Image (cartoon, rainbow, N blue to C red; front, side):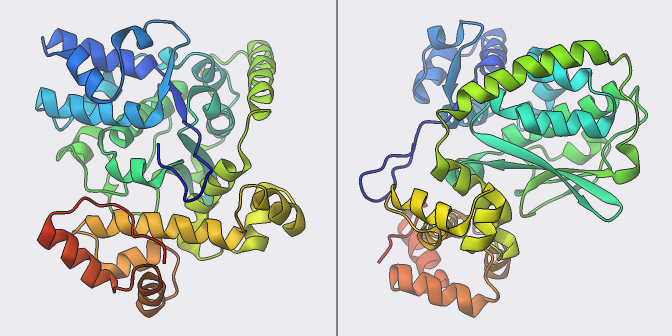
Length: 355
C-alpha cells in the first residue's frame, strides 16, 4: 500500500476473498497458472480457502486485471458479474434481498458494504428525477488502475436491481471513470454507458426506489440487520479517521467544496474536533486534501486520454490556471510539462513530489 510522507503508513485495506476465489476458479478452468498469477499480486492460493478469508484490496483489483489479460478476455468483468450467484456476497446480499423496497435495499447495501470490503464505499444520492448509486475506492491509485472490477460491479448491480424487484426496475445508465475494458459493455448490459465521469455510478429513475422487493422477509431482515450492525460496531473500534476523511474527500473533490468546514460536517464532527484529531497524524484538513489532489493529479496525467480541463474539474479546481499554479507549486513544472516528460522518458505514473 502507499505510504504517506512522514512516519504514518496507510493501513492495508482488506476485502472478502469470495470474488477472488471465483477468479481463480476461472483461471483453473482455462488451465492457466493461477498460482503464478496469484503470486504476481502477492497472494497464495491457501490465503483464499477459508470461508471468511480476506485479502488486500489492491491485490484483489490487480488479480481481476491480470486474469482478464491472461484469459485474453476484455469482457471478463462483465462475464463474471453475469455468472456469480447474488447470495455469494453473504450477509450483505441477504440484507439486500430482504429489504422492503429497492431504495431500502440500496441504502442497506451502502450501509453494510464495509462488511465485504474496506477498499470501496458507496452512497445513494438523489439529483432531481434521478438517483445515483455512487461508488468510490479508498485509494485513488488503485481506482485508476481498475477497469475490470467496476464493470464486474456494474453488471452485478444491474442484476441485483432486476432480480430483487422481479424485473420491474433497472438502472437507466452506467457512469464510468474510464473507457470500458469491454468494448461491448453497453450492448451487453442493454444500457447507455457514459465515460470519464467523476465517480463510478449506476443511475436510476428516482420513481423506481419504492418498487417492492419480491419475497422480502421483514422478520429475517430485522435479525440480519442486528447481526450486521454488531459487525460494523466491532469494526468501527478499529476505524482510521484519516481513511474516513480521505474517502469523503475522494467522493466530493470534484465539487470543490472540500474545505475544513465541509469535511468536518461530512464526518459528523466540529471543525475543532477534526483539526485536533488530524493533528495526531501530523495532518491538517488542507494538507490532507492537498496530498490527495497531488496523488490524483499524477494518476490522471498518466492517462493521456484525459484532457487537462477534465482533470481540473475532477480535482475540484475552479479553472485550469488554478490547477496549473498548484501543480507548479508541487513540482516546479506545469501539468503539460510534467506529462510530456513522463511520456518522453517512459517513466511510471508516480504522483508528483511535494515541494
